[in-house]
Each structure stands twice: as C-alpha cells, then as structure tokens.
Amino acid sequence: MDSNNYTVVDLFCGAGGLTHGFVKQKFNIAAGIDSDSSCEYAFTTNNKAKFICKEIQSISAEEIKQLYPKGSIKILIGCAPCQPFSRYTKGMYNTKKKGEKWNLLSYFAKLIEEVQPDIISMENVPQLAKYDKQGVYGKFIKTLKNNGYHISDTKRIVFCPEYGVPQNRRRLVLLASKFGDIELMPPIYSKENLPTVRQFIGDLPKIEDGEICATDSLHRSRKLSDLNKKRIEHTKLGGGWKDWDNELQLDCHKKETGKTFGSVYGRMKWDEPSPTMTTQCIGLGNGRFGHPDQHRAISLREAAMLQSFPKTYKFINPKSDKIVIKDLQRHIGNAVPVKLGEAIAKSIKLHLKEYSNG
Image (cartoon, rainbow, N blue to C red; front, side, top):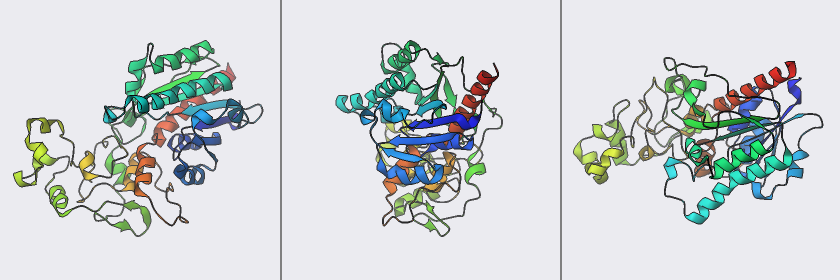
C-alpha cells in the first residue's frame, strides 16, 4: 500500500504539533481544524496544509469526507481540549463550562460514526482513563466498538521521554483501525538514556530575563522583578524556593501547606527531562520553569523545543503588527509534542504496511 495514499485530518489541530509528527513520517495532511484562528499561521506555514477555523460542533461529516482524496486511507486524529480532566486545572471549571469541554470528545465520536475513517488516533491526559465505564471516555470507546474498530489498549499511558520528548509528560494514547489489531510502537528510549534538557536547548544563545534574541524572536523570556531576580540567583541547579534565605520566601511557603508546592520557582536540571510544559511554562512562579543556569525562566523557543518542535518551527507571523505572548504560550503549552505525534504516525504506518502485506 503506497504511503502517499495515507491522508490525515487533524481535529483540534492547534499550532500543529501532532500534525507535524505525521509530516515527518511523510503522510499527506489534508487539513487541520481548530476554533482558535490565532493558530492558523503556525499550522499552515510549518505543515503546508489547509487550516479550517471552525468549532467541532459546527463542522459536518460531509465537510470532512470531502477533504479525503478518492481512494485514500482516511486517518482522523485529534486531541480534544483536556482541561476538565487535567490535574493542573482541577476545580477551575464550573459545571456548565466543564460540560461544554467534555462534550468535545462526544462530538469527536459523533464525527467518527458519520465519517467512518479507516484509522483513528485519540490523545489526551491520563486522567481521562478514569471515565472508562459510563463516563465520556467509556462512551467514546463504545462508539468505536459499535462501528467495527479494532482498538488498542484503552488505558495505555505513555511516558513521553521514552518516545524522544525531553519532558516528564504522560499522555493517554488510543489507536483504532478498521483493518485489524493496532497498538502504539514500543518505546525507543530506555530509562537509562532518556532525552535531556541539555540535548534540546543547551546550544541556544544566552539571553537575559526580558531580552529577545537578535536571531530568533521566539527566543525571548519574561522580565523578572528585582525580587524574583534575587530568588532565581539564589536557586541551585534542580533546586527551588527551599534554597532561599527566609526573607526571599513567600508567606505561603512558610506555612505547613507550602511544602506541597515544592516545584514552584524551581530550576530545571540539565541532564534530565524537563517538567511537563503547560500554557504557563514561561512564568518563573508557575512551576519548575527556571533555566538550568541562566537567571530567568525559560524562553518561548526553549518551551517549544522541549515540546520537541524543531528549532526552525515558525510561530510568529512576520507580517503581524503585534506579538501576543499569551497566544504563543497557549499554542506551545497546549500542543501535542511533535515526537509523540511522530511515534503515533510511525505506529500507524507500520500497521498499514502489515495490513497491506497480509
């Protein structure tokens, strides 16, 4: 079976992390669909594919069917926004807002039922697996079974460094196929040789807090207050606020409950994977996002590279009059790591080759 006939549509595509993994494995990308118009530049520029700005609730199965060339293997992939399930946002969503977000996975299932793609990939936070019976995830799996799909391990939690992503990120990955049994490929890294922060960002130019690199406008870091500058200067490699003198500590850290926030204001370690990137990962006080030895939080480019985006991945439209930092950090923090996307794509390619030879 010719891999040129493998055609992908990415729901909830964002800036294109998952899609770019498929690009690297030479799949044809028909389109990415997302309700956030600010993602369009990054998605189209780096993936040379159509961007459709629509909410999943308003796109029809017929529209998606028309994106696939006649005779192609139809692959539908996506990561429905995961905030309601994530431990990082626990308690932040009211019932109505949570219900709207949860329904996105149900709309994904509805489109699967109507489009009948040959292959499906669904990636999300591990917490989603808890809803595996009568919950939203259980209903998603039931839809797949009712429509004749062979389904991978429904509770497969992937440790991303084992697939080349230099951050301690864990994700639920589900694959499904009309052709036969399908599973994610085995890990390519062992716990003894995981990718590290140094390998991915160690050669970037040094910058100060608040500085923009002269050769890369995405390599920019937030300006620190005088107090936070002192704090990072007193933080050891891999350390945090517990390294500080008493006068530098926040009042909340001095309370008994403060012991549970051990990672905030922390520095990363050079020779280990980074912490999980979030939409707040360029803020010093939002986690262990301090640079290993420079006195600042990581830059947007460093965050993108720790998400395994290539160093050359373009996020900033040179024709834009204004750079919106909160949009860029959302695009990067919400992305599926590219190397995880590539592992998913390679797994599907291996499955299809096995099918074509069977």
